[in-house]
Length: 609
Ligand code: C2E
Ligand code: MG
Ligand code: MG
Image 1 (cartoon, protein in one colour):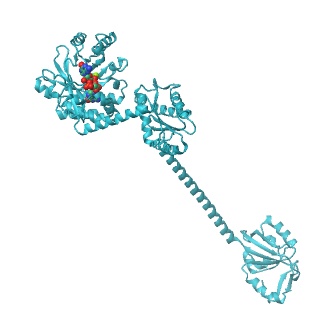
Image 2: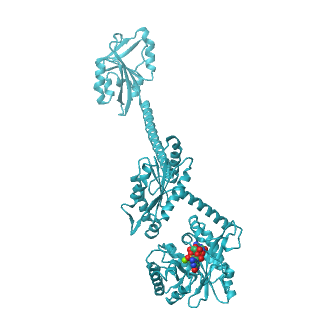
Image 3: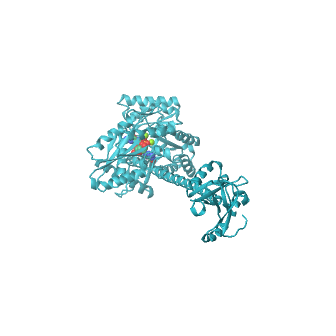
């Protein structure tokens, strides 16, 4: 725009002719202002043609000012927006609107166009203020982009957070539940039991705990594998859960032990529930392969002041009782069991004391060759010294193994006990040999738990080495019931023991109510006929038949036969005539101290019973 005097502006008329307007005196300062504005400014007529524009507008559109003047302002807008703009100009509506302007070079530029309505004084001209929004838009876009990014990051954070919460929830669940069955575990069960017991003084509702244990689970695991065992446990979990009430808790403690907790009056649910639980596990029968699994259930009802662990122990004791009575039944903890538990605790204490304080004695009972009565070995039979009575040297003050071996077995104390007996027994045969001038063997009883849990091969090797005893002078007797369902692990142990040169035999043969066929598959050297058959042999045909069958079997399998409990000459001769190889019994010798084993006459009155 040519420089004019500040009091007039020259504008292009509608037909291109130049017209000059004289500015009112009071408007003059504003013109300067308009010339210096950072926004583009223009005046357009009602027809939309630009009659005035400032330099800034020209530079915004990238054109010389002359090119702007006289042309329609709308030409500088994007095609689709022109119509509405023109309409606004024609209408003379004041207001702001955003548009996309096109520069001369074709580039787009967002603009804000502010229009003020025409005034008489300005000859109906509309003034336009054009603001370049490029920078603002770019900033807005950046803010938008940042916003999007932030939203994304926020969502990611929320995801991480909820993942964390889920992980935490899972962890809590895992620490309180059994992964195999999904049931609450022992910790959660005890927690619920504690809460229920805490509520009893207020509610008056007794709490009943059930201790459920499968009767042949070990057999399933050992013979059919862990997968079969796992499936069985899942089935048990489902069956138990199906018969309890909605407020009862079914939990899996460990192995094949399940707990149930119920709150309610004793005359109601808890009485019916044991039958329901047992029924759920027995009908239809739980079968895995060809093994039918039953369950033993013990229950205990709360009383004032009982601790959760105590109640559980009582239910456990009742379960154990049910198991000992043959399994597949339920038993309630009562006064009788409380007494039994007390006895067992006393026996256990006595056993611990004996083990620690030299209270374990080992007596030996001769085994003779039935052909001539000549001693060939002796069986080691353990005793406990009674801690009271002071008759320490008398055998009469010794406690019989039938009184403490079950407790030792239950408590696991049979492991250290068995080891002590083994070590001491191994020291004897060479002494007897030295005294008598001929070789002896010693026969040691091994409990089922030793077989399953002790490192028997290592213990036996160590005992033999310590006593410098040749392996063929040691025998191990394993009671029949422990050999009925032998796991692959136990079979390996038996084979390894025999590989050492030790003889292995089955004790109390015939008492396990099993078919005799199982012995064929075991690495055995001798069979011991149980004394009950020897006692009955001369008056009970079944006992005699049993003895005869056992002797036939052992001959067929090439096993040595040993009879125990021989008390009369008649029994001796009968057994000898039936082909029994060796025997022991009060007729030949009672269990006695090692020193007296190879004396010519066994000491009278040294009763082992
Ligand atoms: P068992 O191995 O069958 O031992 C034979 C039992 O019959 C012994 O009883 C013995 O004293 C008794 N006996 C021997 N001859 C006669 C007889 O002519 N008449 C009568 N009435 N009884 C006779 P004991 O010593 O009381 O042992 C009982 C059971 O305790 C043993 O039966 C054995 O199973 C177990 N036992 C003994 N010592 C040990 C041991 O060190 N470890 C383990 N795990 N068990 C042992
Ligand atoms: Mg024995
Ligand atoms: Mg026996």
